[in-house]
Length: 239
Ligand code: UDP
Ligand code: MN
Image (cartoon, rainbow, N blue to C red; front, side, top):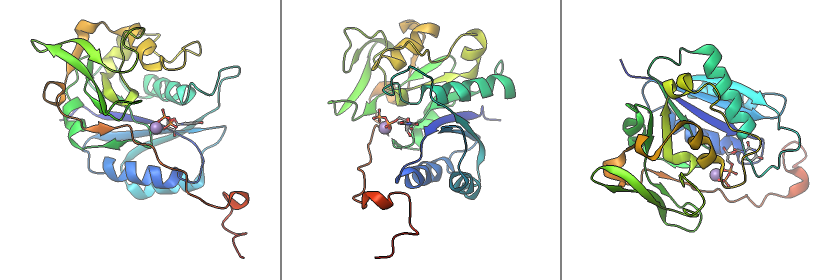
């Protein structure tokens, strides 16, 4: 049977939250052996999100996590991703094969990317479309091994890879007790600093036809032009 893919998604309440999760959920409902770990920002989960997750009808776990004090909000989602990592450590056998993928709620995922990551041994990597000012950023291969990257800030980052551009075997968490997102990570260095804890360049398993196919895009959703005072309030929308 297939190793389960644990898809970890930080999310937060805003006008486009339900549409984003609907889109990602519709992607994941087409993926076999998937378990969606959705982590709400704040001290509570939301009824409308739980309702959606139940409707999507895949395996899911819905948690919440509050922001760390004195950590700039530019480190988006780290408390939520950590909550999910700790949940995995406590609830599944991470010494067995499984896959962990950090999937933000607003990206666009080709179903093939889940096939590509399924048999990750330690860490697999692939290109990601529309990261910073690049059409895509990607690992560069020589003789089938990753030797460098075409990406933003390759100078100072050991692993200039987007959150959507890698997946880990759950065993990688088993073998690295302290693999989680530190509060001290710098803006723009979240992925690189995280991967430095557990990996070397030599560990990277290139996927997506030798990193020649873009199967995931770092898309961003434009805020709808909804009249602000009634932002979350459909009831008062009477005029
Ligand atoms: N996110 C969050 N709280 C925030 C901002 C973002 O939980 O205050 C989540 C968001 O839902 C997404 C992830 O963190 O799943 C990355 O955020 P975003 O897509 O805004 O980051 P960007 O694409 O700009 O790097
Ligand atoms: Mn995003």
